[in-house]
Structures are given as structure tokens and as C-alpha cells.
Length: 252
Image (cartoon, rainbow, N blue to C red; front, side, top):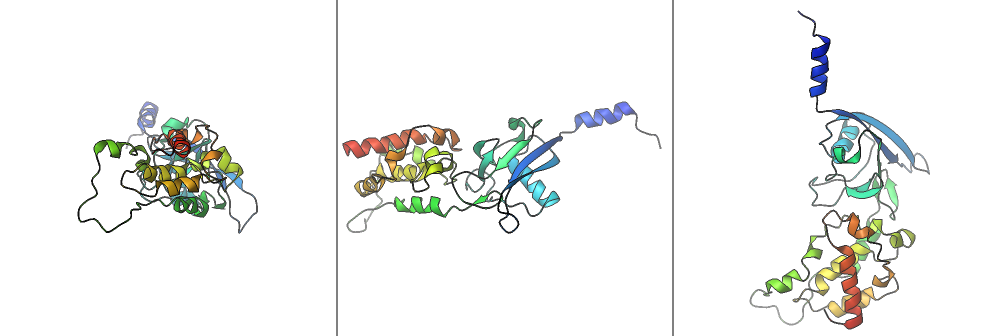
């Protein structure tokens, strides 16, 4: 049997789609230590893969104790929001090749919420704020005998804020929320906006009064962090401003 020449080995190596990438992950296990630590994992991976694929590879092949959330893995469920290279992103939508993989890629939990373990945070305060704005259609009177019709123009009025997937990327990118977890946060306001401006809903005034609270919409400092962080491209800051305007004018 002939031995492969050096040129052939180098050619095969050059043709490989894989690169060596280091993922610097912030680890926290309250059963082991009170403080979080950074841990590096170096793996071979195709740069066209996503950060979520890298986390899977680390968990399945290197360290099974690594803990993170994920569900659909297609940017719809919002489960895998985390800070990647210092920015809030969905791990399932972030390609490794877009992160300068020649340098260590940092991965840590989103800010402003209590870390339970590794990349998993306590989402209860986030979802409580969401529930508090009554994110459902409210009407009065008898049940209608036909569909509640709505014009295309009326639907377009709140179309942007229907895209929210409750990933918390916007809320956990907000400096106000970092400093005061009582603030409703951008995601709750976005979901209130979705119903305040729905022509079929009758509880707009009620939601506006909820957001008129000291921890409500007026806490926003218009830094645009939330808009930049949204993986769905929602104009979050614009929606917050529209809610502020509705509170002043009572027109919506």
C-alpha cells in the first residue's frame, strides 16, 4: 500500500470544511460554587454551523453538564436567547463564521435575570410582566355570530408587534431593566402595543393605565438597545414611543 504524499494530505486538509474554534462559556452551578467562572472549549466545527450546534457538540461530546435552553432551533420559540460576543442573540440564528471564530467566542446568559445554572436564567419575572399587560383580546357584550372583521389598514397598524417570540432579548438588553427588575421592560410594552392598537380590542385604556405606572413605559430612556437586540426585527423603540404618545393624547 502506498503512503499518501504530503501534498495530498495538505490538499485534503485544505478541502476540509472544519475549523478549530474556541468557545468561552460562562459557567455557574450553585451546587458547586457561589461565583460564575469562564471555561474554554475548543472543538472542530464547520463555520457555517450555528452557535447552537456548537453548544450541542460541547454538551454531547465534551461536557454533558453544560446547561442551556433550546426548543425549535429555528428562531421561532425564542428559548435560546443568550449573550454571544457581548450581544444578545438567538444561538440558533447566529452563524459561527459571522463571529470572527479565529478568536474565542464568548457565550454567557442574558443580563438582568437571575442565573439558575450556566446559560439558563429565571424567566418568571419576565413572563409576569407579560401577563400583567393582559396580552389577549378583550371585548364586551355577547359572543358575535360572525367573525370580527378588520381592514388591512387596521391590521397593519399593529403588524410589527405581532412578531414578538418572547425571547427576552430586548428586555435583557435594556439598561433600565438591568438596574431595576421592576420595570415592565420592552417585551411587555411591545405585547401591550399589539392589543392597544388592535381595532377589535376594548381594553386599550386599561392597558395604558397599567403602563402609566412608575415602573411602566415612562422608564424607557430611548437607548435603542432593545431594537438592536430583537432577532425578529421589531421596531421596539418606535412601539414604546407610540404607547407613550397614546398615553398623552388618548388616541389609539
